[in-house]
Image 1 (cartoon, rainbow, N blue to C red):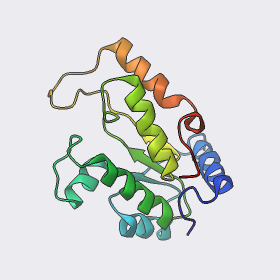
Image 2 (cartoon, one colour):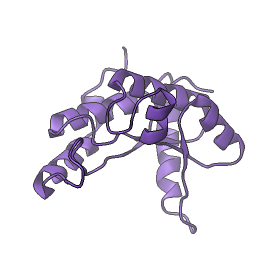
Image 3 (cartoon, rainbow, N blue to C red):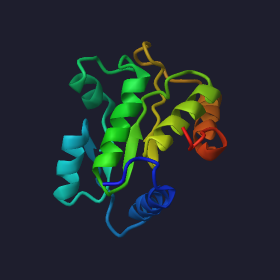
Length: 157
Protein backbone atom coordinates (compact mmCIF):
# COMPACT_ATOMS: atom_id res chain seq x y z
CA UNK A 1 0.00 0.00 0.00
CA UNK A 2 1.03 3.60 -0.49
CA UNK A 3 1.98 5.49 2.67
CA UNK A 4 -0.24 8.56 3.11
CA UNK A 5 0.96 11.62 1.20
CA UNK A 6 4.20 9.99 0.01
CA UNK A 7 2.66 9.99 -3.44
CA UNK A 8 0.65 13.09 -4.22
CA UNK A 9 -0.32 11.70 -7.63
CA UNK A 10 -1.83 8.62 -5.98
CA UNK A 11 -3.91 10.77 -3.64
CA UNK A 12 -5.12 12.86 -6.58
CA UNK A 13 -6.01 9.62 -8.39
CA UNK A 14 -7.98 8.43 -5.36
CA UNK A 15 -9.79 11.76 -5.13
CA UNK A 16 -10.79 11.54 -8.80
CA UNK A 17 -12.03 7.98 -8.32
CA UNK A 18 -14.02 9.06 -5.26
CA UNK A 19 -15.63 11.89 -7.21
CA UNK A 20 -16.49 9.53 -10.08
CA UNK A 21 -18.07 7.08 -7.63
CA UNK A 22 -20.53 9.82 -6.66
CA UNK A 23 -21.66 10.13 -10.28
CA UNK A 24 -22.12 6.47 -11.19
CA UNK A 25 -25.28 4.74 -12.28
CA UNK A 26 -25.76 3.20 -8.84
CA UNK A 27 -25.62 4.98 -5.48
CA UNK A 28 -22.30 4.88 -3.69
CA UNK A 29 -22.55 2.77 -0.55
CA UNK A 30 -19.73 3.32 1.89
CA UNK A 31 -18.56 0.87 4.51
CA UNK A 32 -17.34 2.30 7.80
CA UNK A 33 -13.91 1.26 9.01
CA UNK A 34 -12.41 1.88 12.43
CA UNK A 35 -8.83 0.71 11.87
CA UNK A 36 -6.43 -0.47 9.17
CA UNK A 37 -7.56 -4.09 9.52
CA UNK A 38 -11.25 -3.35 8.98
CA UNK A 39 -10.47 -0.98 6.08
CA UNK A 40 -8.25 -3.54 4.41
CA UNK A 41 -10.86 -6.26 4.88
CA UNK A 42 -13.54 -4.09 3.25
CA UNK A 43 -11.24 -3.14 0.35
CA UNK A 44 -10.25 -6.76 -0.25
CA UNK A 45 -13.95 -7.68 -0.25
CA UNK A 46 -14.49 -5.24 -3.12
CA UNK A 47 -15.48 -1.95 -1.50
CA UNK A 48 -14.70 0.80 -4.04
CA UNK A 49 -14.07 3.28 -1.20
CA UNK A 50 -13.87 3.24 2.59
CA UNK A 51 -15.28 5.71 5.11
CA UNK A 52 -14.38 6.10 8.73
CA UNK A 53 -16.94 6.08 11.51
CA UNK A 54 -16.25 8.51 14.32
CA UNK A 55 -18.22 6.31 16.70
CA UNK A 56 -16.34 3.14 15.77
CA UNK A 57 -12.92 4.84 15.73
CA UNK A 58 -13.55 6.40 19.14
CA UNK A 59 -14.90 3.21 20.68
CA UNK A 60 -12.01 1.12 19.30
CA UNK A 61 -9.69 3.39 21.27
CA UNK A 62 -11.81 3.28 24.42
CA UNK A 63 -13.44 6.70 24.07
CA UNK A 64 -17.02 7.87 23.65
CA UNK A 65 -18.11 9.44 20.37
CA UNK A 66 -18.48 13.21 20.21
CA UNK A 67 -14.96 14.57 19.74
CA UNK A 68 -13.62 12.90 22.90
CA UNK A 69 -10.87 10.94 21.12
CA UNK A 70 -7.68 13.07 21.05
CA UNK A 71 -7.36 14.70 17.62
CA UNK A 72 -3.80 13.41 17.00
CA UNK A 73 -5.14 9.87 17.49
CA UNK A 74 -7.96 10.54 15.02
CA UNK A 75 -5.50 11.79 12.40
CA UNK A 76 -3.09 8.90 13.03
CA UNK A 77 -5.93 6.39 12.65
CA UNK A 78 -7.01 7.98 9.37
CA UNK A 79 -3.40 7.80 8.15
CA UNK A 80 -3.21 4.10 9.10
CA UNK A 81 -6.49 3.40 7.29
CA UNK A 82 -5.49 5.34 4.16
CA UNK A 83 -2.12 3.64 4.12
CA UNK A 84 -3.66 0.19 4.35
CA UNK A 85 -5.83 0.41 1.22
CA UNK A 86 -5.60 1.40 -2.43
CA UNK A 87 -9.15 2.78 -2.53
CA UNK A 88 -10.31 6.28 -1.62
CA UNK A 89 -10.84 7.02 2.07
CA UNK A 90 -13.31 9.57 3.40
CA UNK A 91 -13.08 10.62 7.03
CA UNK A 92 -15.80 11.38 9.56
CA UNK A 93 -14.34 14.35 11.40
CA UNK A 94 -17.44 14.92 13.54
CA UNK A 95 -17.94 18.69 13.95
CA UNK A 96 -14.49 19.52 12.63
CA UNK A 97 -12.88 19.79 16.06
CA UNK A 98 -14.04 23.34 16.63
CA UNK A 99 -16.77 25.93 16.23
CA UNK A 100 -14.88 28.36 14.05
CA UNK A 101 -14.23 27.99 10.32
CA UNK A 102 -10.44 28.26 10.68
CA UNK A 103 -10.32 25.26 13.01
CA UNK A 104 -12.52 23.26 10.64
CA UNK A 105 -10.21 24.19 7.76
CA UNK A 106 -7.16 23.10 9.73
CA UNK A 107 -8.86 19.83 10.66
CA UNK A 108 -9.68 19.09 7.03
CA UNK A 109 -6.12 19.92 6.01
CA UNK A 110 -4.80 17.49 8.63
CA UNK A 111 -6.93 14.56 7.43
CA UNK A 112 -6.13 15.28 3.78
CA UNK A 113 -2.44 15.29 4.73
CA UNK A 114 -3.10 11.94 6.42
CA UNK A 115 -4.42 10.51 3.15
CA UNK A 116 -8.19 11.10 3.17
CA UNK A 117 -9.81 12.40 0.00
CA UNK A 118 -13.20 13.29 1.48
CA UNK A 119 -14.77 14.26 4.77
CA UNK A 120 -18.03 14.10 6.66
CA UNK A 121 -18.71 17.27 8.65
CA UNK A 122 -21.56 17.19 11.15
CA UNK A 123 -23.79 20.15 11.87
CA UNK A 124 -24.51 19.30 15.51
CA UNK A 125 -22.84 21.35 18.23
CA UNK A 126 -20.64 19.00 20.29
CA UNK A 127 -21.85 18.56 23.86
CA UNK A 128 -25.23 20.16 23.13
CA UNK A 129 -27.68 17.38 22.25
CA UNK A 130 -30.20 18.47 19.63
CA UNK A 131 -28.52 21.81 18.96
CA UNK A 132 -27.27 22.59 15.46
CA UNK A 133 -24.79 25.24 14.41
CA UNK A 134 -26.41 28.44 13.18
CA UNK A 135 -26.96 28.20 9.42
CA UNK A 136 -24.58 31.07 8.61
CA UNK A 137 -21.84 29.67 10.83
CA UNK A 138 -22.27 26.20 9.33
CA UNK A 139 -22.03 27.66 5.82
CA UNK A 140 -18.77 29.37 6.81
CA UNK A 141 -17.49 26.10 8.31
CA UNK A 142 -18.32 24.22 5.10
CA UNK A 143 -16.63 26.95 3.07
CA UNK A 144 -13.47 26.62 5.16
CA UNK A 145 -13.58 22.85 4.75
CA UNK A 146 -13.68 23.25 0.98
CA UNK A 147 -10.66 25.51 0.61
CA UNK A 148 -7.61 23.83 -0.92
CA UNK A 149 -5.59 22.20 1.86
CA UNK A 150 -2.30 22.72 0.02
CA UNK A 151 -2.55 26.37 1.05
CA UNK A 152 -2.64 25.33 4.73
CA UNK A 153 -0.48 22.22 5.00
CA UNK A 154 3.17 21.70 4.26
CA UNK A 155 3.63 18.33 2.57
CA UNK A 156 7.27 18.22 3.63
CA UNK A 157 6.52 17.48 7.29
